[in-house]
Image (cartoon, rainbow, N blue to C red; front, side):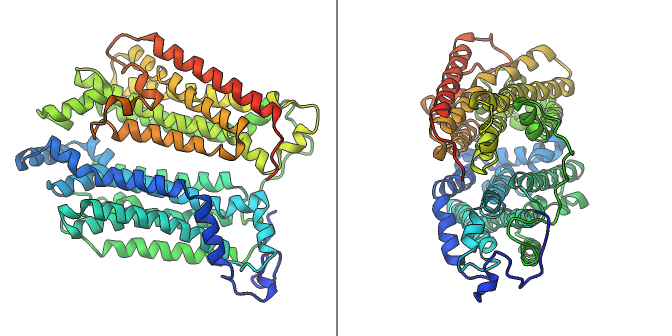
Length: 541
């Protein structure tokens, strides 16, 4: 499937029917928005709402100009905090919101964009649905255009929510921050569009774009850690750094938005040029042929072959993340200074009066919630194999469904334990103290991670059309754990997440009852999901 054709050849994409290259764009856009009618609003509300609500939470913490100025000075002097959040350009409420939430909102917008674009381009081709659509009056570039328009809807919604929510802090600053976040999302939407042309699988397209997002974050973090004013060349090499350099609420640099617009236009043009020179389902990066004789004798070996690259990437990321956050522990006191309300937020997130333990518990909990994303993705990998038609030939032989699924589930549940152990190891090595308690605190997140993975198994096994709802559950838990304490949500709301029931370690004694209860719940969900898998028909598209 690595062959390409010249534009105008009319090979299976509608261009030979006499229609324009954008014919059918409107219908495909409506179809994409209908398929994402839940994901797009939820993602936009979570991302935009996080930023828009930031002013109220920060005002409650730092109610006076003197407190805000002290916070800005301490954060600017702390290289670890600059690496995490960026420099503080202004100590107004709007400036602090842009500092505290801008970078992470830009990353969330980028992730949403890459998912939407790859889903409606390469994933449609991989499953064969695009070939059927292209047999009708659909132009060569219509699917790509529809995917980019769907991504534009996501990012425009985020920008509008941010602008409306922060308008009271200054209309110009609110608009600048909204455009910077939405524009960053569109930069990576077009990056995903390019990756979808180059690669033959949706998984690889997502992986390449995700790596680009990670590289952009690392470049920005490295640049900001070295300079207090954001002037590093490394920061300017990062699209996430461009969003920072718009300097919302700090003398807006509107011209920086032209960099974002230029990147979007250049990548869009390149993606359009490439999609006009290949067949539906083809790619420019040829897939490496396998050996003449197969070497995979078991379903578990096949699952390992399919997921080993993903597991390696997550493992390295968690280890490096642990090393980075562990180096910030000693400077945790600089985050709150003498501000008692800020200290209380950390204690609500970490659950321990000692600020160092609270900071460690917060980081451990964050790693746990992110590990749930790995677990859900790993559980749903066989769902992708099933819908793409690759599982049916396997199951037509003497391979049982449970044995086929078991290989992937071992990687999902065992892999989540591995990456949490690596994050704890990184935290302990970089912090330099209490290695045992820190590692134990990391592994104590497993029951909650496994509960969400069990929910994914249940949805895939019993209701495969709703399997992607597992992503929504994991995202909700991440939002509750990361934003809930800052918004002072009631404990009943925080308890909607399984992470809300776990002890906040390190610090207090381990309480085994909630951990065992969650583990038992996870086992029950997995069992129910596998029973459903045995009883239902295999999907083929």
